[in-house]
Image (tube, rainbow, N blue to C red; front, top):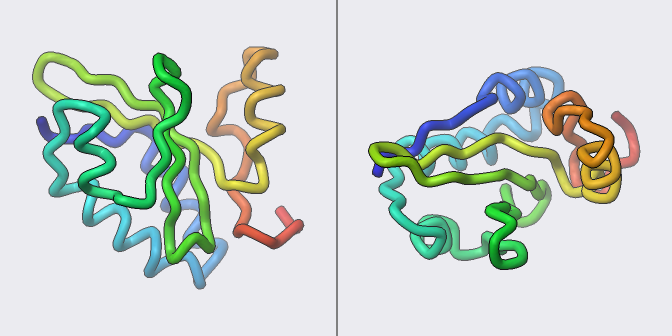
Length: 119
């Protein structure tokens, strides 16, 4: 199934502010654009370094740009499309889970480059 990317604007905004992320995220977006996913295993076929989180969580961690960036995303498989919700970068992992329990949308927190403490 074709992948429907939700909150792509989050990535676009991030690469506007972080020029070094433009190429790695551009490559990632190209792969997603042409992906054909019917199961979570298909995500691993497209992105071999991706980590599928606990069974039933429907979350995946993408290693982007040679593991310079890590992004948590949620996925769902519909009848005609696979849906991928853009998530957060590695430095926000703990904050992501704490804040999502408090009903704050995941995409409201800015992504950070792995190893960089600045927002």
